[in-house]
Image (tube, rainbow, N blue to C red; front, side, top):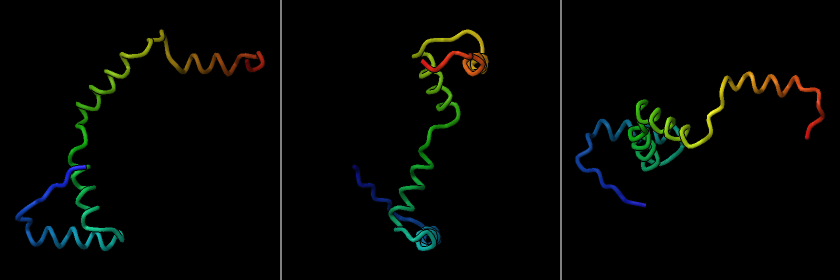
Amino acid sequence: MVDILVRNVDDELAARLKDRARAQGTSLNEVAREALQAFARPSQAEFLEIADRIASMGPRFPGSSVDLIREDRDNDEPYR
C-alpha cells in the first residue's frame, strides 16, 4: 500500500470529513480513502470499454440468452 499525504486541506472540508467519520463510526482516514476510491472509479465510457473487452474474450452465441434459458426450462429431460 502507498501512503498519500494531502496538504493544505480547507478547515471546512476537514470538519465535514471528521463529522462524516464520526457519524459513520469510522476514522477520518477511512472516510478519505472511500472518497478517493469513489473519485477514481472508472467513468461510464471506461466501464463499457472494459465490458466490451471481457465480452470479446468468450464465445458468441447466436440469438438471445432468454431463448436458451426458456428452451432449457421447457425441456422435459431429467437433469444431466
